[in-house]
Image 1 (cartoon, rainbow, N blue to C red):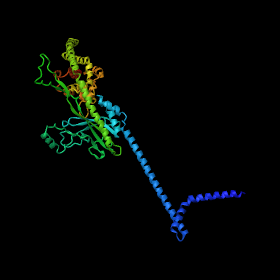
Image 2 (image 1 turned 120 degrees about the horizontal axis):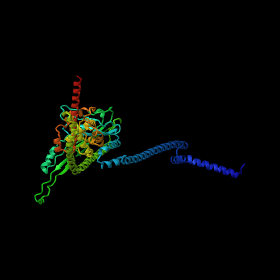
Image 3 (image 1 turned 30 degrees about the vertical axis):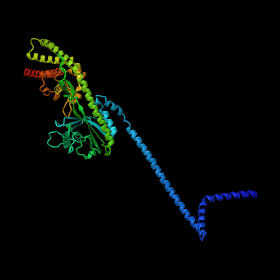
Image 4 (image 1 turned 120 degrees about the vertical axis):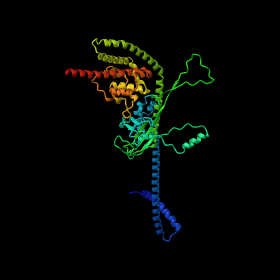
Length: 541
């Protein structure tokens, strides 16, 4: 039992709690209903309050739904804003990542800007363009033949891993072909664009109105794009056709490492008011300058196997940036090699004089030693035996002469400028005689000498292992068709020892003499074996 005061406090506490509950849950609704009832003073106050409370509930629920919708919309808008911020941040990060150089990019750019051995960088450059463009394969081909002179070819010399394009050749249409020839799309990037109508008239007007402008050269495409290779009938496939796009990018540069790469510039005529030259002073010497010819290279890339994807503008720009760097590198490297080669002219002249003096001395020694060799045969030797011994001795002397200047022969591998056609043919007959396979330095499609390949064959091994042990009389040697005596004579054509001595450096004269002596001994050995066979057959009868 509790005292009356305690019960009073408990009841007061319960009333306080009930009052708080009512104020919190129905207070606002009842207050609003009572206020409206006082204002309206309806006849049925209870019904009015009841209807008011029902309407109140509907209004509050509607407000709640609207608030929830607004809250949901705010949440969606906030999420969208956050997603946009994330996307913007990702785009910035992607742009920063794209701006970063690819692996090997900085190093390759540095090497391209400095090296003279640009061809050694071809594989790395192709891999870099592949990485930057997302291509399935990238490869590089060298175009041969001047426009309008003979059938053009594109010989592919480098490619990315798995491209299988190295060694492949594209044949173009012959200039005199009577019917159109399907030569593939890649040649399109080397064909001049048709002039725009009205350009000629505009140029003529400019010429009449002022100083004549120099004639504009032909303009060429900067790229050749095939969006879907499967739908382009002119595309040549070296494997199974797949969906994808193809882009051919031209690389043009000025070349001076050709047979006519040195242009002699006569000294300028002295000015009228120039003081007279001193008595006994040597006349002004002519100078030299590089004679440039345009060379063309192709970089091809495709997206075959990528579900028909085409290259984006950014990827094309990346590839063209690097083909531009390649063009600059090739032109710069050739000019540097030209200057280095021409800079050796004085040293070569002095070396040639030494070689001439050496050969003159060897010739005198040969005369006396030849007679000793013939005398060693004895008095019973026939004229045929003496003649054969003479050829044998002269070939051995020619071989010894080349061994005397072995360093100069090996130095051929350092020649970066292509020699004139006649010396190249002499070197060609020498290599064929020494059983150097034709395909090691002859391009299969054009049948032309690849000087870069040929020059590298002239090394110490050629002199010590091939030349030193070569015996033209060895009947066990099975010469291929291009190395037979008739083919070698046809290759030499009108070149003789006399014309060579007048027009060529002594190194080529010495090699030609060796080739001619080898041919003579080969023919004599065949005739000797035939004569011996006839004698044996006659003896058996």
